[in-house]
Image (cartoon, rainbow, N blue to C red; front, top):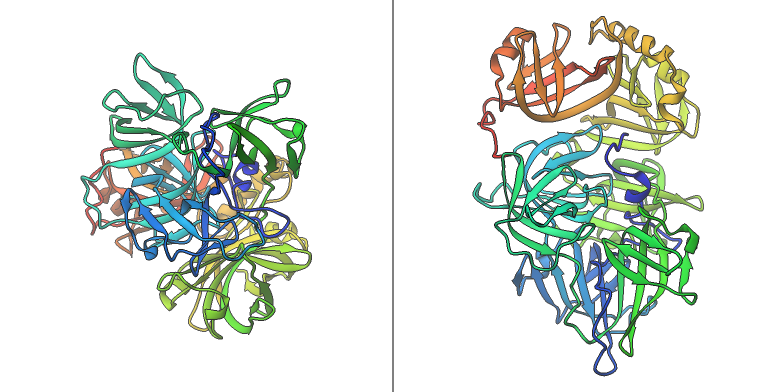
Length: 598
């Protein structure tokens, strides 16, 4: 699957690793100078993604919360049930941060959402959401609360938590539906400053220009710093009413003994032994330990975690850990048929899965779920990683019937295949000519897809379970190592023949990259074309078109749309970049023709 705006190596470094020392821990960037402690400091400051409850688990470590002060979006005194798995929090503890200790207690927990606003567009083929002018990336480890990848729509209001990336995009670890908030509620974004102009009082976060002339910055601005903004979008410019620099969390605290900093390196000076994370400088030395890499591997764009110690008025980088690629080896849904609490395992689809302290547990009705609260016949979604021959669970979600039968994906390594089926993640899935087949992001025929299969390749299959428990697939995707370079020119002509093979598209031009998007129409032409999310979309008599869940002709479909209408489109780009619609759908029963102020 494409990740056009984000380096996979950087993104993957922020994902949870299971075993091998990988972690989900991250702390807001610290200032380079911190006042010396007054006496025997014991406070440990951590930040990262909540992985579970029963108190709070962060970085695979449990912290009791009996006397913890919890602050959520600026509101102190919140209850622990205001926290959710996937939220990125800051935690302080006065206990020894010994990884082997099981009785650490949190003195304070603070959660402050990073992104909140109205969805402008969704690119499901790329795993990206445009919100308040920022490209937000999601994946299999992102927790969706009150919604899902398939049910989320343009016009929905969401809140998100995660990490600002160096390219201006945002990686979401947690997304929650917030449609109950009033339309007048300001939007907010978090990102990395570029192209700062202090005279004009503007800068960019990614491709979104920010005007901060109406805001009083909380902290000194500079390129590469991480900031949080609140405001509105006017004429495609984010006009900030509030602006916070997110790099000075511990300036006035003098009792910190240890802290962690994780983020993207923005600059390195090997001679001076310094590096910058989000524009903040840190010095390392010959005594600094390195894990999963060495000093020569430090470079802009690399994700690292720094361990900091504060002693005698000095801040010391004691260790630099390179965040390793956290490969997600599979994803599936199924029913639990066996449980072994002592071994820390359960069985789904005749496959055994193991949990550990890094596993993220989620339940829409009970956030305090753990392995010992699961039962036989529970319906679950599992995201896992293979380590030393064992399937280690990265994320486990217990689902109700409605959620379980929604459209979803199965991912895994191909164990067997025939002319009409594939077996992966313990599940055998039938293949039909009516499904979409993608090879290196390009539409191909079923025969071409099968010809490219070999056991051991990783597949993604989209579909849903029926009432009989069979997984009915509508899309199969294989991305080979080497990508499009292996296709060559012949695949272009083959893709064209596929248009007639499955009866869906009858265009006389060749097809190319597959696209699945949702957004507001920005222009309508008289020749069965319209523009959405920057794509020119071409519909034809062969396109499957729906209006309020009713099949309609191209003429009826075009008569029902106008600028501002929300539309979902699936199709392939032709050789000149026009999106040839295989399917398109609009809902006019909702008032979706009114454009947001974006």
